[in-house]
Image 1 (cartoon, helix red, strand yellow):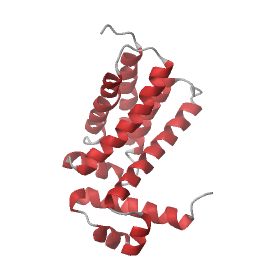
Image 2 (cartoon, one colour; image 1 turned 135 degrees about the vertical axis):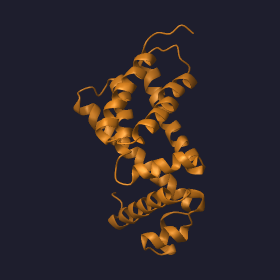
Image 3 (cartoon, helix red, strand yellow; image 1 turned 90 degrees about the horizontal axis):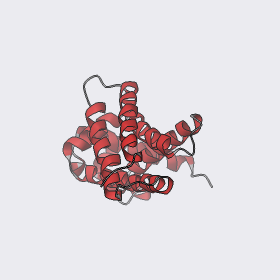
Image 4 (cartoon, one colour; image 1 turned 120 degrees about the vertical axis):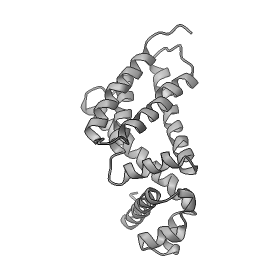
Length: 198
């Protein structure tokens, strides 16, 4: 059964409000009261949706990653490569880059990467869970000499740093960033899918 439209709308408003507030100040200093005031909702309304600001942050990340995954699935399907793990891997990274440019997102991500606090640790946790799924797809489809830890390092940590430097740079656009990320991640997947001597 689909969720009530009012619930969906209120949660989207609270996510957007938190995103805007994090772009202005440290996540650690933000209070539920500030979120409610900026969103123009009561604390009762907030607590009927989330137990605290941490749950709201997790919901924001879940929403972001579900949009990234849907964008990736659509891209992979449109390209006719729905069973191609390599194409899926590249499209996942490019979709992540493109979704980072959604309204308000870039300022939010710049802030959490600069702050290097709880919000970034929580984000890295979400990305690590996503990487586990990607690594399983890769190891199920290909024989690789790389360990899961090496795959996580190649597929997650390096690409996140690359995206951070690319997307947050002066004059970055969604199109330029997506094109650079496609080239970069194509190179990364070429490395992952070739035989290695360990």
